[in-house]
Image (cartoon, rainbow, N blue to C red; front, side, top):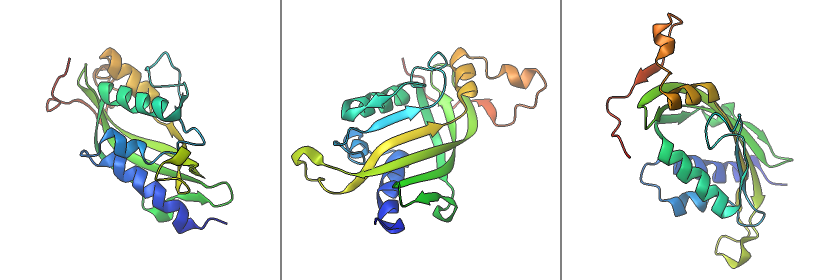
Length: 181
């Protein structure tokens, strides 16, 4: 049976790849399996944002997801709860954890602070002859996040919440964000 420390090693590798701005796309992809085909699914209605509500499968699909995400959003100050708070299921080789970050929709420059949840399932990578064959790697990466904030920021309407008197804590325009496009 796979032990908790065995499961946490590839989780930490993925989280480090996600939070380190110097990570290359190939380094990020190397944290996922090649066989079985990996899956990324960010839950939500696909009409709200192009990376929501649809499966991205295989190494090409994973690359497409992260490329799409990085073309639309910038992510700052990503942090995760201590691993003592993570739910680790050794029998199905899955880890659930919670994180926080500031997300900026690049086109509108609207930003919001968010708490999100990951469920990451691991598998032994068949590798297809790659050097990583036989190692534990991410085969399923599921995300639950604030799809409403992403949608409103995409439309440039997230700031309307501040004007409506509904509070608006954690919502702002990111003046530091360099515009691209």
